[in-house]
Image (cartoon, rainbow, N blue to C red; front, side, top):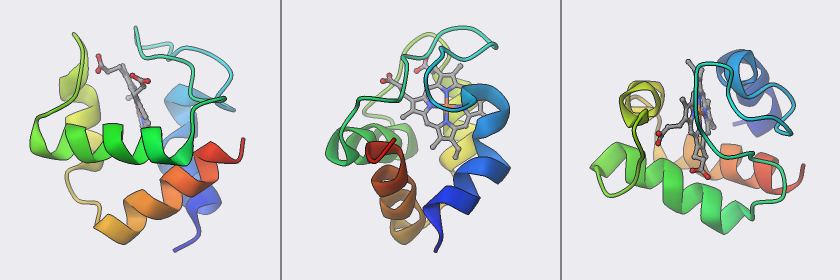
Amino acid sequence: VDGGELYKKRCANCHRDGTESSPSGGGAVLKGQSAKEIEMKLTGYQNGTYGGAKKKTMERMVSKFTADDIKALADYIGSL
Ligand code: HEM
């Protein structure tokens, strides 16, 4: 899985290049967070252990991702 490609297709629409908060309201800036943190948060959106007021948006985003997809995305975001 190419995390960079996946990010451009599925995430950049809202999170842009990772340096801004999501235009749809809320969400911390992604750049600067470690791969481990991002992996924990994305997994948390899948199993209901993480999220803020807008978590429904992210729960929908990650519901179909495999653990490999999430790892690839986390590694990519951690490298921003
Ligand atoms: C939150 C990643 C797609 C809107 C987050 C957070 C991460 C993340 C890691 C948690 C930030 C934090 O609390 O530190 C991703 C990835 C995506 C993706 C990897 C692609 C698979 C999207 C899309 C949208 C979006 C397409 C808009 C439709 C939001 C919002 C939040 C958020 C609103 C805050 C949710 C909350 O209240 O918990 N995202 N995102 N994201 N993202 Fe995304």
